[in-house]
Length: 299
Image (cartoon, rainbow, N blue to C red; front, side):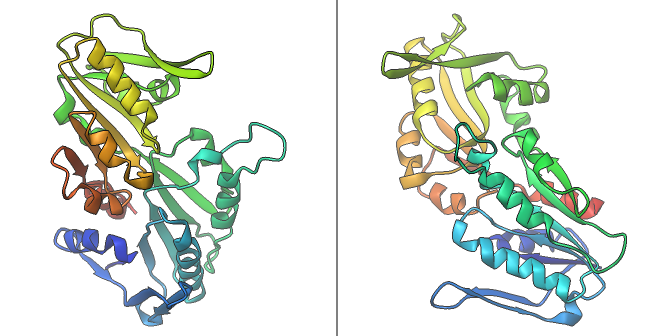
């Protein structure tokens, strides 16, 4: 029988998966002491000589050590191998350096996770990431110790956008994801700087009375979405929605964004987005449950 261990933030997904899969939850307590340092208890007989599926929320930096300590001790308690499901790889902004003395923290993160070994000869751990921000990040991990598999949540949107025109915020997003939607018309934005001001330029003149959806893998700030929305409205767009697999909302920026577009769509790859959407009628959360289920079944 499969064994699963989840971050407390993902317990709701375990409850859903348990109704569809022959799977048991290992007896593992994942908590923090009052000073936020980890308080973890693993019942060894639940994990020894088993492949453990571990669904972890890395979206909050203070949980990194908690998650890493859990993974390390699962190995020390002789898990046969780890199948780590990490929907959101959180250090996407620093996969490369643009000037001297900057630190590529994505590389540091990958090095730490690559050092998770297995005690059983010939077995490697697996790490699954959804819509990693830059494909080069796959190659930051040490393939001698860990297998990296990347997945996309874009197909979860296919049915509900089959008549919409997709607008990508930049050429990089278009290059990576346009093949996922071969039948949709597509447009690419460009960001230009005029003197000291950034502007969005849309290379498309037939905007009026069309349904549009802005799509990207990850969005952190509101600027691109709102400015793109303004440009579309000025050109008489019929409706404007926006989707990102991972949507980070610093300072509750979802409130400002939902005021400026017809619908904001994201996934629960960052579980905190579920509570953020509860009081917003035009914010929708698409579940990653079926993606997680597929990974568990295939591994």
